[in-house]
Length: 369
Image 1 (spheres, rainbow, N blue to C red):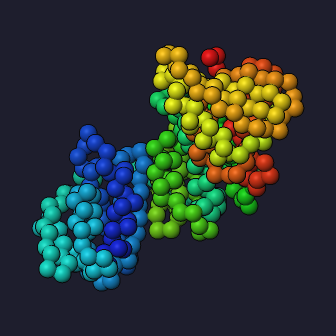
Image 2 (image 1 turned 180 degrees about the vertical axis):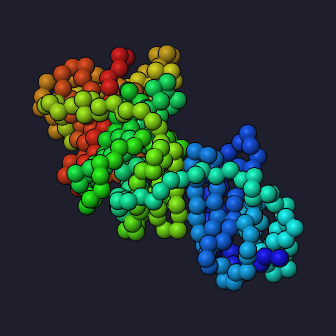
Image 3 (image 1 turned 135 degrees about the horizontal axis):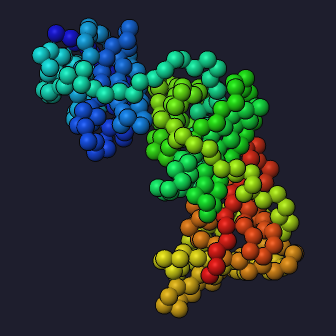
């Protein structure tokens, strides 16, 4: 019989990290389970949906475990979560059954044959991984991930582009109607890296990364990318293909613009969107000297009208946009002020952050209203 004793929180936290990826409905039921095995004095818990794999480690109080086991992720998680905080949990495994004990509580779970468990194989170790703080990587992914395409036939648009080279890291996402770009300087001696991360991988990675100064290292292994941070190894498939040249989309010659409070603009757009057309979701920007007028209307001839004072002295502009695209960026970029610039009539809108250590650009194509 194998046996270990572990503090409730030290078992619960790894299970919570894995739960999201094993909770999906799988054609193979074995993927709703986690694999638990021993590595030295550590308990290793692994879960996968064959696109993303999370391997996390934790240290038991006592350990006399010799064989791996495969058990339901949801049942084990719910049992451990229901126990008293900071209580000791005893796991005993024999004859394909896992006994969980804590205080006067007892639970018996059936397990599966570890040989039936499907995992994502990985290649050699990364030679020169990229290193960055968790907080910075999380921030860079958050600033662009909402712009990823939704099931586009151009499969390379269904992910976030990440590149590292010449001391700079860049993240980009686009659905061909809007584009979000974020970059910052980093200390890196790695070779040039370009990778397209699937939408789901980025979403799960953002959840796991913390806003702190602890490092995360990552690199490519054939058609996979692996991130290592805290006690987690995050392995993901990548989207194969060439990402479009985003530099051609980002305007460089916009000469008309204004700086505005992000919160004031967001609140005005949210109010105006109440009367926007449900299908078109359009908003008109009427920009005149010292004034921005926001107009939304719908098929019932109802209209919302908002005015904001701005510092603007160029020619008037009357241009339309998808209001959802504007609200998206204003909700994700947590700064006090934004700069909006325009070119000729009918050109795109470029949103940037003035005087920020991390460079951010957001391009929205115009629409007819």
